[in-house]
Length: 267
Image (cartoon, rainbow, N blue to C red; front, side):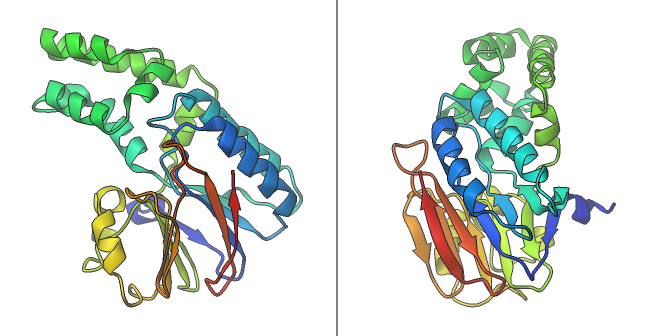
């Protein structure tokens, strides 16, 4: 498998797609969305989770468990394939991967504090560690910080399915007929998909300026908006973020094979 194939997921363009917005550790809201989705999901449908499963909210482990359990329940249905359920990497998951390599950062204490400001502390605590421990380890030096990140990795692997899920997150997903492109927070319209890099997680400001198709894709769908503006639809984009994790709703939206927004679920 090429590196591009490993970071992008290809969806069947002839099928409906359900997209689930940023969750931010709100397990109860995710469970409520899943209950609605379970009754509406039909053979041939596909599901794309748009990232930020953790961060800010306090129920990180329950959220990941709920994602894994629902995936198993859907896969148990006739005609559903593993490729029909896709998980994108959000900014929170990108930070988590960087956190596990914190000992290699030029200024680990500063990087850690920036991550805390972005909401990663509940995720650290969910896997049996604390920010204070990391701060002390960073002061002690690289060896101490390596032990801290090593323990964090071990704690992650101890939970069934958690490490596996984190290892299969995709950067983006697109339909094979060029209709829909799914991303976490945004893209740089001036760059090809293979050169987006951090734009998937931090390039949200350019999203509102997209006023034409991006390459072959007629419509781009994202699941995280810094303004938490709910459902924002234009001819070329759809933004889904009801503010889950910040006092708002978790959103899920259904798109048809032509990219039209059919319905929105809220919890």
